[in-house]
Every structure is written in structure tokens, then in C-alpha cells.
Image (cartoon, rainbow, N blue to C red; front, side, top):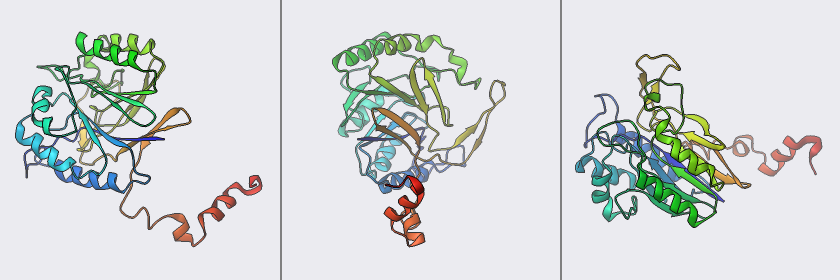
Length: 284
């Protein structure tokens, strides 16, 4: 049973800095790390799907590493449009968080029931996505290595969202990805971030899940080209649960009072008894 947690778009600034002068992204990540630590059963790993920092410099990445180290399960990260993959390779080299071996800045992780393939959709000089030929060749090689159920993580959503400024990249950039996925049925899920809102979709037959941001949410109109608003509110962690041969994905908050407010403890009725009541006439 694989339980994979995802957070995204943490946008850490320099120590004591506020994003846009308003958002304490460090405090949001501290709180989220503790929320992840409370989750039961304990997930197998956490993936952070890009935009780790607001401005890609050594100080911000070192602060991110300090903050994410509070998470008590294995952590991996991948670059977003605000990141610098080459600098990440250098700064993260003394950690297990970004286990890249070449300048594609991509890697594969073996989890208990599934593989995780982390892609790099960063494009130099633009916030728009790109998957270069070497990146795509790496992906094809990795998919040829194993037919184990696979989840692919990247920062940008390889789908049209109906949000005009997100869809500026068009569809050309992910057509080769679509072709590759069509030849490898073991890929069951694509996860991403970037939009600062949660959304699900498909790239042909493969389900996509886009998580909201730990930093803040964007309030974006659909199919109308107006500037988005934003809400200073972190999105909770997302849990991707591989169960019965497929992924079930969704928001997975675990507040500090979760154990106290369990319905068996609040009602004083044993959980097994409550389940029998729920089953009613279908109880064994």
C-alpha cells in the first residue's frame, strides 16, 4: 500500500521575508510539515512539485532545506518555473531530496508498490513549460526499464485548464509526453502544481491531479482573460493512495485535533459498533 503525499509551490523567501509583503510562506511550510507528521498511517514519502522558492538563490534554498527537514518521512523535490535546476543540484547535493545524476535534473524513485518519475519542466528565461528532447528520452528509457505502476511528477500541468494565463503555453509542449504515455500503460497518474489551485483532468487516459499551493491560492476566472486575485491561505497536503491497483487522490488535512475529535471518542461508542450501525441490515 503506497501513500504518497504531495505539496507544491512553497515559494520560500529569505529568512524573515514575506512574499508580496503579506504571506509568511515559511510559517505555512512549518505548519504543513507538522500536519504531514501527524498523518496516520504514516505516508511512504512526500514530493514537493516545484516552485520551492520565490527567487532562486542559495540563501532561499538553504532556508527551504532547513524548513523541510522537519518532515519525518522521506522527501523529494523537483524544479518549477521559479527554481534554478542547476543551482538546486548544487545546493541539494548534501541531502537526499533531489537525487539527480545528470543535467536533465530528473530522477526515479522506487516506492513499495509504484515507481515515481520526477520530470523537469523548467524552461530557462520563461515561466512557461518545456520538456526537452533529452528529458523526454530519459523518460522513455525509464519507462522501458519497468512495467511497475508509475506516477509522474512535474511542475507545470500538461493539460488545458481553462485559465487563460496558465494556458498561454498551449498544448505543443506536452504532445511528446502524451505520445510516450500512450505507449506505456503502467503510467497511472500525473501530478503537478503551478496554478495555485486544485484541479483534476486527463492527458488522454491518464489521470492528472494538480495540487493547490502551500503559499497562497489564486482565484482565477475560467475562459476569461482577466488578472487573477489571490487568497492568503495554504492548501492542505494531498494524498495519492495506491489502492486496489489504482490511485485515489485528494486533499488530506490532518489537523492537530484529529485524534481528539474521532467520532468513536466523541460518542463513546466503540468503532466496531459504529461500523455495524452504519451497515444496518447489511451487517454480517
